[in-house]
Amino acid sequence: MLLAPFCRRWMFAVMMVMALTLPSLASEETLTILFTNDTHNRLQAFDDVNLKQNVGGIVRRTRYFDMMRKHNPRTLILDAGDAFQGTPLYNVYKGEPDLKAMSLAGYDAMTIGNHDLDDGIVNLRKHAQYTHFPLLCANLADAATGNLIFRPFQIFNVHGMKVAVIGFMSEHAWQAVAQANREPLKFMDPVPIAQRLVQELRPKVDLIIGLHHMGLEHDQAFAKQVPGIDIIIGGHSHTRLDKAILEPNGTSNGLGGTLIHQAYYMGVYVGRLDITYDQVARKITRHHSELVLLDQRFDQEPVRQLVDTYANQLGAELNTVIGESQDVMSAEGKYNGPFALGSLIADMIRAHGQTDVGILNTGGVRTDLGKGPITVGKIFEILPFDNALITLELQGKVLAEIVKINASRLRKSKNLQFSNLVYTLNKEGKVTAIQVGGKPLDPERWYTITTIDYVFAGNEDLPFQGARNVKTTGVLVRDMMIEHIRKAKQISAPKDVRLLRP
Image 1 (cartoon, rainbow, N blue to C red):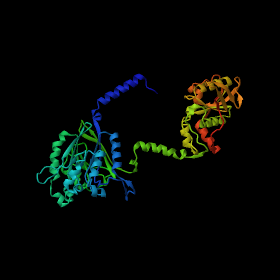
Image 2: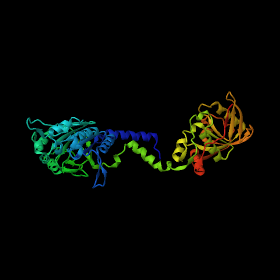
Image 3: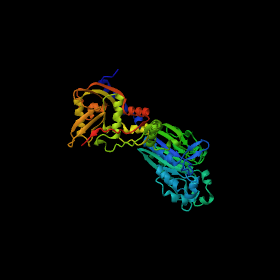
Image 4: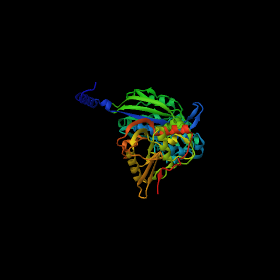
């Protein structure tokens, strides 16, 4: 039962009051964190022997990032290090294409992994100039000066949500760097640095993310020693975590601990973590995590994929050959008078309706028919409109008026193609004679006509006064033509003359 207008207005007012008096709901926002780790120079998709399919690649990764940012503009994209080393692309280009591609993909920050130092700090700094995002590490310094090599953290204002991202490397990862590449650098214990930074940043931001190249075991130990970090995005151990794990540490963030997530390696997956945060209560109220497999779903542009999906569904039917044309039938100059393809379709219309005359609007024929095989799709191109056949009876004097109007429009639009009707023009372009079935038109006789509903409905501005026995067949002119060609197997251009000029 429908509510009365007053009741609907009253309910709407109550709902608005409820919305205004529930700040905990209105203050909730969801941050989407997308991340990779240990991609190891896998910029191209590859065949994974374990998954037995083609996976990964920066192109698929970029398309997924774009899709997610459109879905939720409040998105951060992070990488937990070891973008370098793994394919010949690194051996030749030393990381340049990786950082360029990651910039184009829209990464917001990256921490430093041990393999990112495989050709030394000078090489990493050289290629870091290509990045549109910061490289973060709070515990690597210049051995000579003691100054940090990279920015320790970055505060992002993500559509009103303030998020601090701090970069760290573990000693385990540090020891994996070649001795010669470690000499210009100084490694510092990340724990006291993190404790100090968390204390400094906590009052300024809504969330703190540790972006780590440590390994899962070291991330878990770190979370216990440094409460106050809400999320750790990790790398180095190549761990596949299908869901984020919670390390309890008493953090007063609504979870009582730190969420830790890691996404395997080689860019097979993108990690996704959705954090719903109440900015009034300053608590995480909900979270969702998963790994997204970068497979062939992401190979095509969304619009192209959509179009191809529909086109492929039609492909088999549209490409079906239904017959053969023995002539080229052009639609060029079609408004000048009878033309072969128009005459052919008018003949088909008349034959289908079994009437004295067939009438087709010239504008309904949209393209040519070539010589050779004819497909269903070609008929759709010739007759794209969903016009249905109609039969009727029309007195000769009204039919003559239609022919005269048609003659006045030659070389213009809105003229007609006739079947079983021949008309003669004088030098002034006036109709001097009309024949139907080889006999002079009788003004008083009732002639049977087959045409299309579009024409009869007045869209060609033609008179059909006094028409009787009007019957709509429901058959589309396009379907009629397809069926006619299927039965005939071969068609050819009509050779008879339908317009006589001096």
